[in-house]
Length: 305
Image (cartoon, rainbow, N blue to C red; front, top):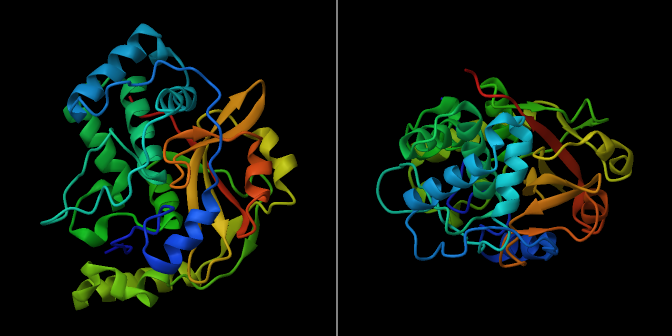
């Protein structure tokens, strides 16, 4: 069974205590939200089902269903600018289950929710139940909830699993990415920070997943290549920042938004306190953080009819 670890999910920025949290807080940057948008002004008062209905109604008014899915991802992501950053939102009591929270995001739940909403809009499956189905499909290995280890915690696995499910296409190599090798073992090396890793079977599954990730080649577009490579990016493309942090693959995630033809990073940084758009282009953002060693890139695929 395919799994990956995490009480403070390694898929995203700002979810770990102590040293990792300190590192990731420095990595995020605040960004700058320049656009005035019809984003959801009363999220705190609404429940998640009401927010989903409002997003679908807004998308219908704008005629988004006729647009490519990537454009819809970017538009929905943009509409959430100003939404608060919320850490640990997936860490709830009891057995593993789908958590829906559109009132606040971490860096990956922002991407996941925007992608799930966009796929619903594009395919015309716009009920709350259908949104939950899309989110489960994206967040879990093979789209199936099978205990805590089935959640895709390492972003490298998130990318690979969603490529197999034809949710996204990994375009890292196509954009000039080159191979590198790294030992991925952050979760097992910091097991004391993860209450789920008290269970021996869960820990074993995580270690097996880390061994698998460490044994295969990894790819990244380095910071030096990014100014040229980013020219091929489109709104809605998904970005993960590769980190030099020991044992970790990806430190942060977000999506591309083209403004005046310039690719910028739309993301939920813990240091920014809410969803923001980077002040400069993607390359400037990535190169401005010393611990970043490059990026991975993915393009949303059209949902099956």
